[in-house]
Amino acid sequence: MSRKTKGICFIILSAFCFALMNTFVRLSGDLPSMQKSFFRNLVAMLFALVILLRSEGKFQFNRKNLPGLLARSIFGTIGILCNYYAVDHLLLSDASMLGKLAPFFAIIFSYFILKEKVTPIQCLAIVVAFCGSLFIIKPGFSSLSNTFPALIATLGALGAGIAYTMVRKLSLNGERGPFIVFFFSTFSCLVCLPYLLLFYHPMTLQQLGFLLLAGLSAAGGQFSVTAAYSNAPAREISVFDYSQIVFAALFGLILFGQLPDTLSLVGYLIICSVSVCMFFYNKRQSD
Image (cartoon, rainbow, N blue to C red; front, side, top):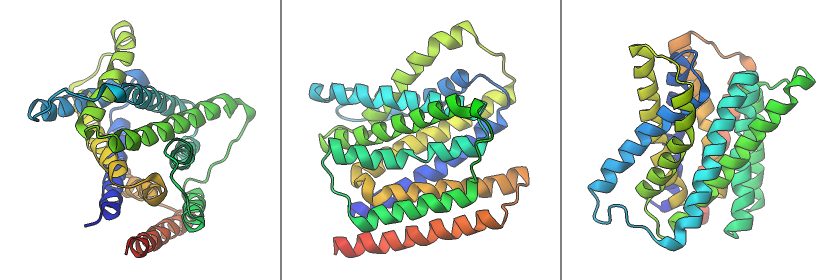
C-alpha cells in the first residue's frame, strides 16, 4: 500500500472517529463546552501516554520541533474551543459548514509553510466536495446576530487548518505521532483545567460514560489524522475528510431517527463520487 493510499485510509478512519465523537458528545447532554473539551483530550492524552511509555524513545523529542509542537497545540486548542462555542451559539448546520473550511485552510497553509504544490484538478475536486457539503448541511445565516459566532467558527477552522499543517511538518521533521498527540492533548487539558476547577458541572454516571467514549473516539481520530497527514500532503487527502458528513448522517439515522432529505442524498452522491475520482487520480499520479 502506497503512502498516499495509507493517508486516504487514515483520513477516512479519522472522519469516522470524529463523527462518533460528536455523537457521544450529543448524547452526553447539556454540559459546558470547556468540560467536554477537557474529557475529550484527557482520554487521548492517557492513550498516548501508554504508547509512549511502551516505546523505546518514551518522551524524547527533537528540541528543534518545540516551536512546531507549540504551534500545533495552540492552534489545535483554538480550533476545538471555537468549534464548541460555535455549536452552542449557531445552528448546527452553520457551525458544521464553517468547520469544514479547515481542509481549505490546511491546503493554503501547506502551500505557504511546506511549499507543497496544488494541482488544478485537486483544487477542483475540493471545490466540488465543498459544494456537495452545501447540499447536505444547507447553511442559512438568519440574522446579523450570528456574525460574531460565525467569525469564531471560522477562526476555529483556521486554527484546525494550521494545526493539520503543523502535524505534517512535524512528521516530516521526524517527530513521532504518539508524542504529537500527547503534547497537544496535555496542552489542551492544561488550558481547560482552570475553568473545570472553578465551574465544574455535576455529571451523572451515564454522562461521564458518554464523555469517556467521546474521548476514546477523539483519541482514535487524533491518532488517525496524525497518521494521515504523516503519510500524505493535505492537497491529496483533505477531500476525504468530507466522509465525516456521511458517517454523521448514518449515526443520526440509527440513534436519533433523523432521515436525510433529497438535497442531502445529492450531497452524499457528490462527495462519494469526487472521493473515488480523487483516489484513482492520485493512484495514477503515483504510478
